[in-house]
Amino acid sequence: MDTLKSKIQAEGQVLSDQVLKVDAFLNHQIDPSLMGEIGDEFARRFAGAGVTKIVTIEASGIAPAIMTGLKMGVPVIFARKHQSLTLTDNLLTSTVYSFTKRVESTIAISMTHLSSDDHVLIIDDFLANGKAAQALISIIQQAGASIAGLGIVIEKSFQVGRQELEKQGYRVESLARVKSLEGGQVTFVE
Ligand code: 5GP
Image (cartoon, rainbow, N blue to C red):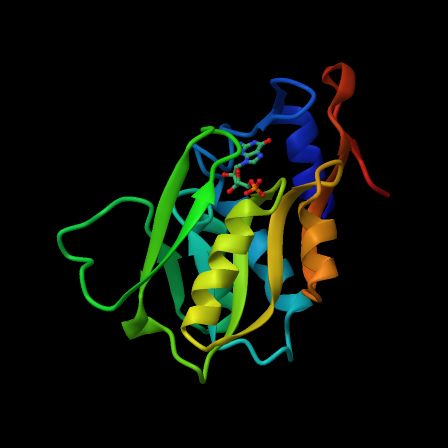
């Protein structure tokens, strides 16, 4: 997706060989117009895949997920990372090690919103080692639902996330595939 790649080149900040900061349009300030295009693109790629629900993880997955849900006409569920007084019933949980925060946390979705009739598209902002994706897959499987695939805004292809997910048979669609962040430069997989 050329607009996304241009935005990464213009406004992304390479913090290290491993970490890309995109707080200008995705992780803190959000560009609604770009999110709209992202929603269009995921909807196009997963058209005809029989998606009934979108699942993401708070907070940064919500913006691209909601735009995709809008375009596909399906509800969006976000896994919560924090305990909530109102989220108490029938919880499905999984643990996830955060690549950026370096801590393990528990994420949860209420069973009320997922069933074995659902065919789920997972959306997230970044794919690094795939830990967040694996935690979401575990929750969706606990609900007995099936998985249509994963839609990732920015994949860091030099980390193992895609490889691991493909090994398990999942379809991974990434809108920008970063080959390297070395020397402070972002290069993309062609
Ligand atoms: P994974 O679970 O695939 O190892 O990492 C994915 C999660 O970590 C994403 O949901 C995202 O929040 C965060 N993440 C991983 N790498 C980066 C990065 O380079 N930049 C930012 N902003 N977030 C990242």
